[in-house]
Image (cartoon, rainbow over all chains, first blue to last red; front, side, top):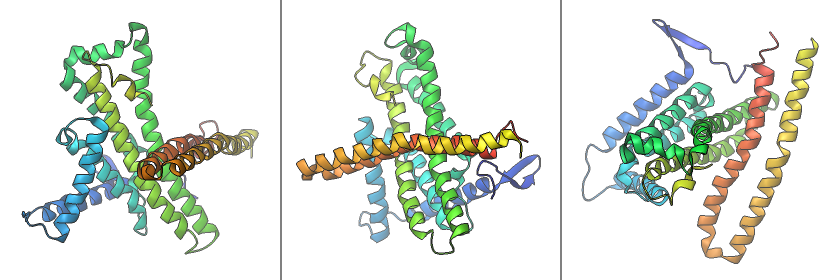
Amino acid sequence: MNSPLATPALFHLGPVPITEAVLVTWGIMLLLGIGCSIATRRLSHNPGRFQSALELVVEALDLQIREASGAPAQTYRAFIGTLFVYILAANWMSLVPGVEPPTAHLETDAALAALVFVSVIWFGVRANGLGGYLKSFAYPNPVMIPLNILESLTRVFSMFVRLFGNVMSGVFVVGIVASLAGLLVPVPLMALDLLTGAVQAYIFAILALVFITAASAEGGTDHSNAEKGSP
Amino acid sequence: MNWLAFISIIGAAVAVSFGAIGPALAEGRAVAAAMDAIARQPEAANTISRTLFVGLAMIETMAIYCLVIALLLLFANPLIS
């Protein structure tokens, strides 16, 4: 059995090794990008079936973002919505035969978590200025500075190990059961994987949103949201 | 097979088996509390079950961490090889 931690390169593009996860990610990007551009080409005030379904998805995302952050949805819709839709699509890639979800590899999850880490800093600096953001590390008092810095690193780390562990264990268990029992036996496990994938995508997006909201609310005089960021 | 590999395999099994105890107890308590809450307030069932799913996934993460440690011991052990 192959190690779930290894990522063998399929081919090399110059000096850069291209793994299966990268290829599948490109496929998802193409699928989502082209699909969305076709779907939103002819928007009308009298929506048809397809447009209604799309609007339902976007409104559900907006509602969750408004409820979790308390800010207008368009502030975070682009980033959080993209995270959610991409991770959901990636987790459900396990349905396609012969394709492993890219989130079952450490590298993809680490890249997503790095995005969240950078965007927490970006939104925090944008809301409070550089000084305000740096000052938020000294809340509630300067003794907490090392702990706050450590926390901002470890919470992102635990986010990506959580996503990796859940998706990878699903793929791993299905692989083991399929090799032991037979073709159709792991189907109920795969159905469970669908639920796990959706919940994990939701959790990843909501946690990213909570961290960003906490960072952009902390620096000012209003500390009511400050404790929201602790996991 | 040398004794390092031997200990690693035992360590992986111990990590998963003992690491699953805590999350299992915690998930049982969480589900019981959610059932209790839904029985008292059936109209809040949607909110409660959504929060329950998120909480369960959070708790389950602890067991998943143990699984990751076990896989690290088995497949990416720096002491063997």
